[in-house]
Image (cartoon, rainbow, N blue to C red; front, side):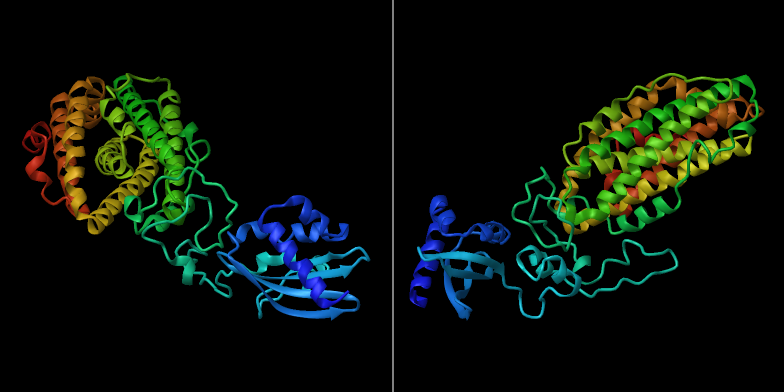
Length: 450
């Protein structure tokens, strides 16, 4: 047989592969070459556009060809052809590594010196990066080094590929629907994640439940009602972000990781306040009206959800927690409300910084965000007006028993005026600077009620 005869067999083999003529392809290979050809993983290079013989050599009586395949990416493969007496057959196959990135050391030993199973070594990702370890350890921000810290404005894939990893064309879509950075991004999401996991605590063991003193019955009832309302509200803070997690592209992993901590924070609060209501001889109180919660659950975009939950409602939740800590009569209750406030403050920080980033990138979104608030503010005030159980409980707590109902009611009005002030300041920082002109009149009235 001559070299040309082997070359003819080679070209016929590639043509059969392109046409997906399986019998012809299998018939052109010796049994020992079947696994090696399968290991070439050529399905991931895309549609073959052309090919050329880049090199040829003799290996004893075998003919060895290096073929350069031109597809979505260029790949060199090495095929060994053997004269079997009845024709030329493929006796061996291997991917040719990119120069300078040849498998070596233990990897070459693992593959028996055969390259096909080690093509992942030539992934083309950035290599040799080192992240600095700081006083807080190796943080998410610290590993944003080189290309790995480049967050795209628009993600181009719907898979779980980690940012900076090489793509695999065989990986299926994961149903992701949020591809634009502006829709979910907060510049401090990574830092909030680090703080959340480094300041974690347990309701079971982090609270000295055996030291909780007995309270006067009316005060105990008031705290149990406040804890009931907080536990219910934190169910929403747990459920809603969980429903958005799988929609967010993996190029924005800082946001996904932060939201995971919020989900856990809120679950911990549901547990904590339920335990507090039942730990001191009291019990659960009345359910809230829940209209604003329904509105948050029905949010049609991530930014709508974040604006309503993180900026508006969590701001009110934070005030309830501050009242609980400030007017608690013992260190155990003070710690319960203080630890929870620490967590909710992160939720607010995420919401405000996301709002700010969104409006910096897309100022035209302000009109739509105002429309969300036009409806949500009315719902919030309506719930507040109808929630007699919580208002009475807060009045008792703020009155501290000795101050009495009248002083408690005055302090409650002052608390609501404080909410309005903080709410407006958060919106202004986020970029909704003209919200004061569109405030729901009943909400605006909080300012004069104090």
